[in-house]
Length: 49
Image (cartoon, helix red, strand yellow):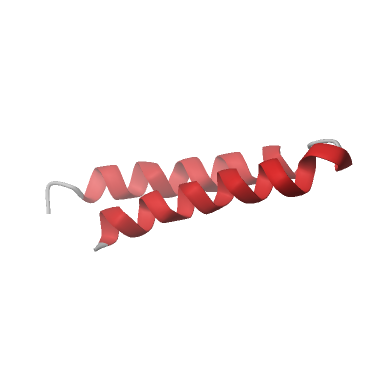
């Protein structure tokens, strides 16, 4: 259970970063936002497994 803080910090990073990504300009929003969010959730998924 020592990895629980890492999982929580990763989740907190996602909660903090997604609203920032939503403010990106429209021409960069879809590609960049989608790629970053996918990578963040993938990293959390790896930590959970």
